Image: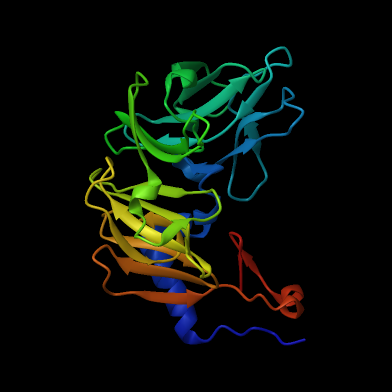
Length: 287
């Protein structure tokens, strides 16, 4: 069985990416279900179709030794939970949840770094929104939420929405990013808001007529204007200064300037099943 050896080039490449983006670089594929809060804890959602009282938001230390529930859900109020997204500005977690498979709300947990079950605050009723919520992001000022979801009509159009904390939202169809002859591939969008709030990075699967499907990364304003195709890839994540984007490209972890320059990648995955027994898993990518 062939072992995969990382040469000095790849080691330096990986080290450089981690210095730029921190440990969150290895979590880009989990953005829809995990978040990060101060003190190094990772926040995640526990969800089962049984919708039992253990569904909710949890935090775990990086070593996996200590797991705590942050949501005081009970067996009488069964929740289906999505999110969460952390806002450093107001030190709170936002997430969406449906109670007993009926009404849905966007909730916040204040000061999640404190640990233990925290009081929940309802921001707004999901039923008031023009689209469902599949992934939440905060703007850096902590005053708005950006999310993608499906329109609530029969067309189930994939939408990007920006909402105030009172639930007043404006949405636009993701299909407006496509060129003539292109169409949306399988459902699923990854989004991230730049630290300067003026640009949204997102990836979608695009299928050309008669051709294969590929994931594309786009940059656009929050209202869908001034959009540009940046690169083939998925799960984009902004650097803290808003100048670089980290993204996945099949077997690689890549970095690119927001203007499309200085593009480089590090090999982080092998699809050869024979190699997997001797490989090391880094955040969902294997070396």
